[in-house]
Every structure is written in structure tokens, then in C-alpha cells.
Length: 337
Image (spheres, helix red, strand yellow):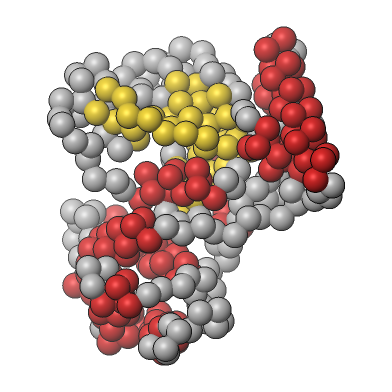
């Protein structure tokens, strides 16, 4: 990890969200198509009847994403193009303000409409958003009160604690970045596009193991946007590893770097780069690189400490060098974070 990236280890504040307009536009279009319109029409992709638990679970997930959209907008500066052209944010807010399905969100949407209607689009004005029903903890970045090496028996325990969201994989926001990411033990086997090297992870997305040969990548999804945002904002990501639950007759995957049972928090990582790759079928996908943050940024706990084994020479050298480089880089500037 370059010294310029390792320097974050000594900063005690979270950098503000960095928003680029193309990503913002794509995100607004996607959320209107995937969340706002289906909620208005009483539909979702569960494939179940409206009185089923599966339908309600999918609807709850849609509402959580709508809350995240409104929460993001209260911190965002918009322009006329975003309000009126392809992104059509003004029309999206009109739908939320008028459709009966959005009664719980209409006050927040109306405040946003009023703010964005001003000559400066209300830059910097506060907007009150409805509370997240007790689900605030996973929304935080950084360690969020946890220490690398902490463990949990079951996924519901992880969610309740607030270290990760309800879904396996990526939990984050398309504009501010990934908050947490989970890796299944034995990720380097089978058709997995991920490669887990411990202090370095290659994470495959946007495409997949079954993607056939194509000239272009599939359209980015919410998870891809979140990973891109993490590169842009440089905010560290919580990484967890877990042992998959096995049903009757199922064999455990080959031993990996994760726990044999349950879930384990392995510290903060930085998403440092993305590159295009191909799978065994020559189908395209994107591969993101995550590198473990320096020891000072991980409360002095190494990855080997998390696993309960002795640190390898490579990890000792790399960790020590990251910390030393970060200190050397900030020393001439007199920074005191």
C-alpha cells in the first residue's frame, strides 16, 4: 500500500463523501427504476404473493434503500441537469410526495423538493430524515466499536451487533462507499472469482463466474457503485470472514483463512484499485483489490492475531513498512491527526 494511502491510518476523522456527477446520475436513475417505481406500483422481485413473508421481506429491503436514498440526498448538492434531465430527480421526488405508498417518507421528500427549488438548490441547508428504526449501527464506517479478532456464532448475531448488514457480501452506499464486506471461508476454490490472500483480497463483481464472452461488461449494480465509491472516498472497509452453514450431507469447503465456525472481524481494509478480468469462459468481470490497513489503523492487531497464529515474515515486513512510510510522509507537514 503506498504511503499516501497508509496515511489515513493516523486520521481520526472521516473524509467527506466525494461525489462524481456521472455516478450520481446513474445511481438516481437506478434507484427510481429499481425502488421508487416498484414501491409505487406495489411490486417487487420476490416472485411471491403480496401476503407472503417473502414479499414483505423484499418490500422492507426496498424501503431501506429508499431511506438510504433520501439520507444521501440531504447531504448532496444537485444541479439543474440532475433535477430535470435524464436523472429526473424532481420527478422522482414528485412520485414520493404524492403516491400513497410513500406516506412515511413524504415529509422528507417535500423538504428536499422545497430545498432544491431554490436558486442555489438549497446547498448546505439541513433536511430532517425519518429515523432508521434502530438500524443505525451498521450504517457507520470504521471499526464501529469493534476490535479485529472479534467473533460471532451466527449471522443474525453479526447483524444485531451492527458490524455488518443483513446480506452476505457487500454492505454499503453507492456514493459514500462500502461499509463492510464479508468473505466465505475457502473463497479461492471452485468457481469463485475472489482470491483471499489475507492481507490482500481480490474481489470479483459486475459479471460473474457464469458470464459468457462479451465485448462489454454488464451494467454496474449497487454493490459495484459502492466499491467504486470506496476507491474515490478512501474510507476504510470492515472485512469479515465466515464459515458457511452446512446442510445435511454437505461437505465443508477446503480450509481457508477464515474461521472454522461462525464469523470473525478481521479489521479495516482499503479498496485501492479495480481492473477488468476474464473468467474461465472468457466472460468479463471487474476485480477490485482490497489491502489491509496498517497496524495503527487496526488497533495494533495483525491479521495473524485475528487468526490466532504467528505473523508471517511477509506480514510483519509489510505492516511495519506501511506504518513507517505513513509516519515519514506526514512528518514534514507537521500533521497531527
